[in-house]
Length: 287
Image (cartoon, rainbow, N blue to C red):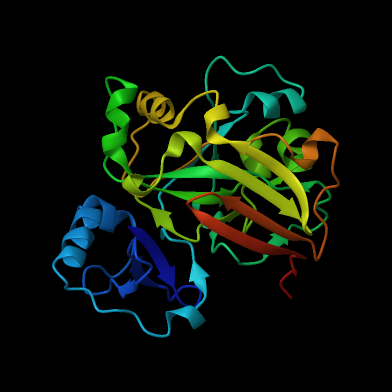
């Protein structure tokens, strides 16, 4: 199954896309696709309603804005330098342990919403990433093999970064360069684990139609199961939490490409999970 949230910003409604492409209205099962939905076994309830023919077919959904497929996560946990080639282009050795940082949850926006550059930002960068959404609380898991039972689904994530804020202005406090408004386009869909093989998904990104990143999740240093197990030793992962699992080589930080500028267009794709596109704009100051 594939979960979507469609509608204007702040007024999105829950939908479900079946394997045959039919889109159903999910509002009879839940008010939203949020942490409460996952905590109440919402994925299983949606599947049962679909199988029992209880979901009405959605109409007019094609004309609606696509929002982030998960609403109001309590946490967005991110992994740095999780592809060996990306670590190398960043001038670092592959890490011995996962590098962990956080994005503010309010960075989450729809997959096609504009990305706003902060005032004075000159080194904004793109990062296509496989995102994992937690479906069941994970705490002190005994092994990576236990992780799969705690996954609600996967999605495309753009971990937009302002490198000067991340590396220079903040003295290396990564979250400061990751948490500006709109800095985490997410979606278009949340895809359940039975739909994709997360170990071998192709990731690609481009800017203004010019290729940037092209890799596969098979090149991860730390796989999805290991990351969930590892994180559960240090924090409790709650339903609806999002993990951005790292980005492959091909970012502007490498020096091979220019940083993002006003009116640039980013396009990011992960096979089986969909495509997102964002226009880059300068943020307008209040007043």
